[in-house]
Length: 589
Image 1 (tube, one colour):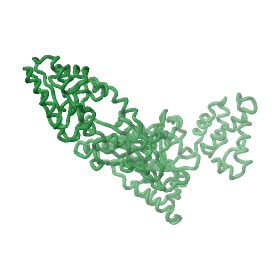
Image 2 (cartoon, helix red, strand yellow):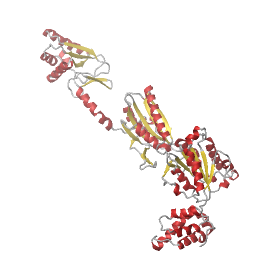
Image 3 (tube, one colour):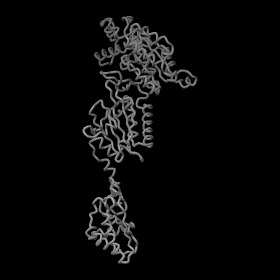
Image 4 (cartoon, one colour):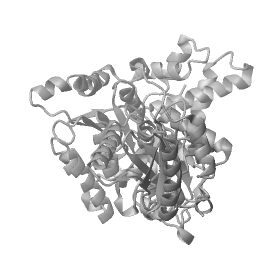
């Protein structure tokens, strides 16, 4: 009866109260006796009995099997009777199996080899795994983890946080301006560079923000995993920054499992924000880790390395609703001092009030003086105000230049946020007279824009390293609150039409590819009195066309000058003269 009852299959799950039978090594009992006992009483196959005996000898003990309590007691009594009759000191014991445990017969669950070395709890069930199998599992775990397939984010998160209830997870988020996404992406790439897994996500609804909470939904609302989607963002370098539209990182530190979700927060008509959310198990370690990550992200955005020191403007599309879509980086050629054709007195005034001023900012700050400044460049159209701004931008090392057209003044608050972030900065507002003219001629919207500009200029701290450069073609139309009050405009600098020396330099500059003799240069300068630099640039292009038509550009004649001037000043009428920046004072040859 005993023999029948103890022939129990080892892969049957143990019940609460079951007993494990354990053989112990004593260095005296003959091996053959132990093998015969296992074979005859415990019904082990001969090969299994031999392996179990070797395990006892190697490890000092081994589990023979797990049996219902009454069966275990019968088998033990039968075995002990034989041991007593033989006179050997073999010790056989039993111990209770914990609830939910698995029947252990001393063999590795994976390979079948006898082993008592590694008792592993798998989903609440106790089993044995030998050293060889444990080593193989550990060796192949990275590949298995990396290659495991998921269709939905909820499954990936459940796998990653296995054993941690959902209500024991804490998610914390930060939102950054969408136009700073390049710097956010660089920081993310550095912080989460070695995840366990990374997934792209499918956004079914454009205006639904992807959060950790939505990613844990299952069933029909489960969020599908999709290919990672990137957008190239130009930051003025040789290669753009590849910015993710969204993503889910599953990561682990030495002590902590965590997940990171990146998504866009969209509101109709507004700039999309970049949202970062980090989920960790509840507790002090997780909270400290999250704060450290967000501090690094915020530091990266504040450093703004992607845009610092460049020439920028905010990019708005045709369906503009009040906020920018992103940052445009302008790649403008460097302009040196010798390329700026202005009267020497004007150049010196520029240098003193801009370049020298910026160079002495640290000393001014030490003496308690303001380091912000406002400059007004005025003069007729085409005299070189924009060219002068490029000269200043080229010669202000470390400065970020923000270019605001009159049509973009509604974005002034966003520009000023950038200016404060990226300072030292030069904020250029072109054609400021379009919004800063006499209040009596303004509508309510224009007056609101002007007030915004005045408030921004007044609201800067005295130690703000921000330089305002305003340009206008009509200084007489500027509103008194902007032009008359000290502290907003610190220096007005006229950019006049070029004098004769300047016109000669402009002829040589814009005709540098042509065979110009001194006679031609003098003639062109003499006959262009009162014109703008833009006029001379167009004149030299027409002279080049005439030279190309005659002999391929190898000669320039005075007749080329006369023909070009006739077309520009007389044949086209008064409107053409105005459009080209000409003057009726030009000398007829």
